[in-house]
Image (tube, rainbow, N blue to C red; front, side, top):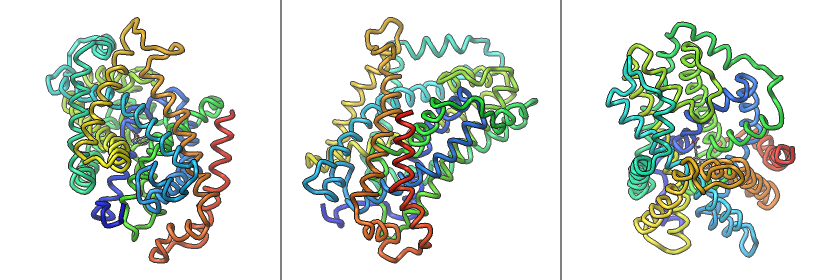
Length: 446
Ligand code: TRP
């Protein structure tokens, strides 16, 4: 594909917001707070930040380098950069992972639409004396309604991707990310005004290192990759749309900072409220869908807060899901010469099939279980614990050892057009070449 054929991002600002949009998602609002709750608060946050800087940042740069230099989606980019080698198989691995993630992502995306509808119908208003845990389990294990909401989510997502990179993905992200930021800030302030909010902050920011073990490390690394959309080609394809004039290092730093900020803000919106109402922080995945409704129905202005919250969750989910869908779509367009519309249509069919299986696997007594895990949990676990980690490992090894050092420098400085201090280029280079691969390997082995 010639460079002129690639309809890339229209502006630097748009590129950054699309990347931030991909990074900020269910991972920040749904997953991060419950992982913090399960893994002992502040210490987990600290480890998460260290991993993000030392490991995720270099992986991010490596993915963007592969995409921008290879000028194609994951499979094609590896093939362009290492013709005749087996490296493009790493690209196929990412396509597989995207399947897995997108399936359960669409299910959870559907849940957030359902909860938005419910909050608008005053289901979480003061005095709504419902058993929210029962409500959640009966909804999520029902047959039809989760599927219908999932389908709505898939269709919204597909509509954005059909519109293309500049008119769909970039435009959506440019408007929705600032709005999302505003909504989260409102929630943080609302939460801070609750009596006893301080206990929540103390839990979040007090580091208890006795809770740290190898599982915590794996969880922190997996979460950091998941949250930064790494290890499955999303930043490769977005990188391929980034202008040659942009600085990769500054995209990486901005995306990482905003992604971490969003995660911490989400935790700051949720945890003080959890403690203020005497609930348990270690609720697992149900934190957002069970604990929060209970909380909304007990707080003044709860319905409005609930509506804001679920709009935020939905926006975040869509801006991330579009990047996952773009990985598959661009792959189909490039490899099979389909039109964007045809490619997205095929993706819709695939998502409906796998999403339905995921959703059904949550029903009691469902045969869709493997090793005691439902397909839903299995997809989540396999993709974030293994495929993503291995994908990230291959990415840094490729850029650190396979690509010429001069090519690395050429990308990082955009051929000299971008001023990147020499020491920064060196530090990132050694992080990519040595520190990140060793750290990922060590954690995998542990
Ligand atoms: N980063 C998103 C989140 O935090 C999820 C996501 C989007 C993702 N695209 C990805 C994860 C690509 C891994 C790879 O919710």
